Image (cartoon, rainbow, N blue to C red; front, side, top):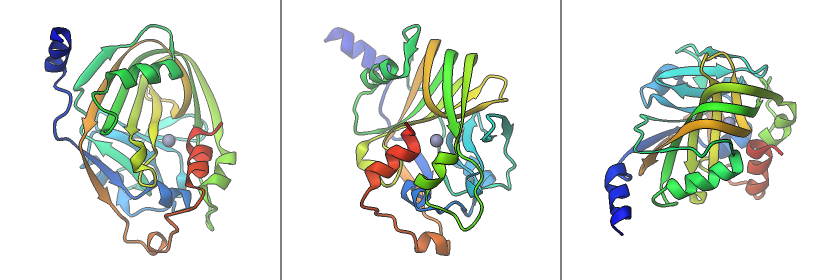
Length: 251
Ligand SMILES: [Zn+2]
């Protein structure tokens, strides 16, 4: 009991902390690929996050207040503040729970390790993994043309990349299952290397050595688009579980 109390007092795990989200995952699934929020506005909501860009033009990751566009060929570049996003999640990252990762750990084993770090599965968590990876496997969406097809049909165009022996950051969110339909339930993470030149949506990885940091979120600030596309979207598909699996897990 004494050990547990010491750990808890060291971590200060759960205090009020807001996670911001632009639009809904279900809107993206329904083919709403153009947003009204600029990257400049989004950065006002947090220095950390992920998402995508208008026309599904690559994956987004925000690290240390800089927003990067991860293109379908695996390259990364800083995004322009005027670019827009149809879906993004952001927060001001505070590393409240920090652990060194067991060495040479797979994504699956690390997932259980992260579960053991969380004080409760009922909160949201921003998740940052910094270190050296033996391998990171990513896939990245490819820019779409109107008329847009629903997302489960476009992910077959995705470009896959494998990065070996690379230092970098995995950034994203661990979201409770009850947020299904709003966000991506479970872990949704993107990778960018330390040179900030390559990355993508993470499918799998092995972490050689690194540090895991969690920032618990208790409050959700949800911004719904005022666009006609959003107002007409079907946001409650019957096959939501299957669509989430096809588009986000992509196996
Ligand atoms: Zn993603």
